[in-house]
Amino acid sequence: MAIASGVAKKLRFKEEASWGVIAPDSDTTYTRKSLRRVQSTLDLTKDVYQSNEIRSDYQVYDARHGVRKVAGNINGEFSLGTYADLLAAALRYSWQNGATFTSSTGSEITTTANTIVRASGSWIADGFKVGDVGRLAGHPTSANNGVNLRILSLTATTITVPAGSLTVNATPATGVTFAVKGKKLWVPSTGHLDRSFTFEHYYSDIGESEQFTGCKVNTAQIALPATGMMTAQFGIMGKDMLTTSGASAPYFTSVAADTTTGVLAAVNGVLRIAGTDVAVVTGLQLNIDGGYTSEPVVGSNTVPSLVPGRVKVSGQFTAQFDSPTFRNAFINESEVGLYSFIEAAGTDPKDFLGIGLERIKLGGAQRDDGEKAIVGTYPFTALLSTGGTGTAFNGSTIVLQDSTL
Image (cartoon, rainbow, N blue to C red; front, side, top):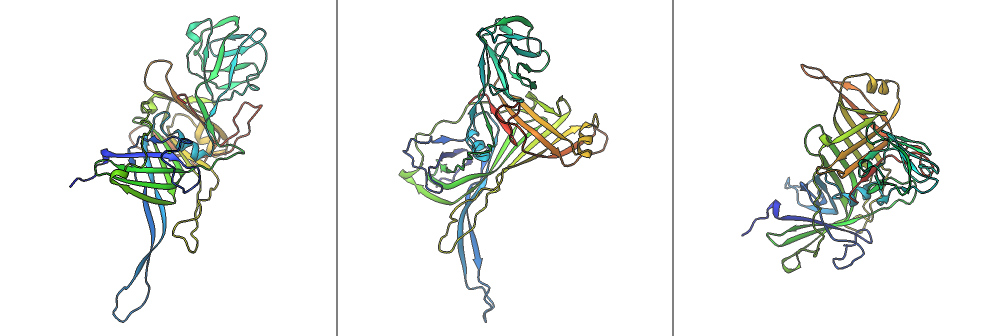
């Protein structure tokens, strides 16, 4: 008799058209996908009730099962594109194209070592934002093309990027394109989406399948250690579980293959806090909490809905204590921005993930001690920033950018 093995277990999913209604295998509205993982603990849970009767035989006579629910975590090592659907569900939006601009007569581009200057028009009106990462194409100085350029600040006509990112060319150039690479995701002000999925555990070595319906992403956690792989964890809440076996397993067929992007590592990244690239950060963790709740009703063994709460973003970073900047930000209740840029392995231009928290408030500044570098721990809460259309900022609690989308 075969025993199920974790390496033979397949994790698959598909978005649902209606919450709690199993996503049809053959329907082409949404794509069936395979999902890379370190671990998936999705499972059916039930409320269990034990009789409180006091009996002459001194024993418990009955116990019953109550409401059925799905709960568990999907843990993985973070790779670009892999968890795009789950992140979009957590932030209740869809990935959006970034801004793009091509110079022409009258709006020519020139470059300094750390700026891109246009003769007319407005970077801001065109939709570029602080924290965006873009690339030039068609520039007469070939070294300026295909370089990941982090926007540190911008005005109507000038984008500022890290010093030394560009080669100086003061000759006005037409036909030069500057575009935000990939797609961006943020918590919107309006038009929120409430997506749900059917997940499948297919135990390929024993021919068993479990389908978890009505699954929503309740929490998401992204962690960047100073050394080691970047990780992600998604807390899932769902409605119910169905099973199939034998010739009926797996439920999802012709599934899109796993992504092939490399796992990100924090050593290949930059962290910018309070307007400065920081070289002494030893770790960063982000927490996204969707606040979903459910209430059982009489006459049903499943909950009728999962009700969304506010999207809350928090986290903490740790850093070697080399200046009072972060400590004073906590003491003075100052608000600062936090931006992270992590590149994948490979040749230039490398793919990347960008994370932007435009307005955070530190909730502590505790430092450790010992015969080593002193490290401070700085928990924070991310807040809704002022921004949006026609401004230099996104106007959201959190913004993500994935260059592969």
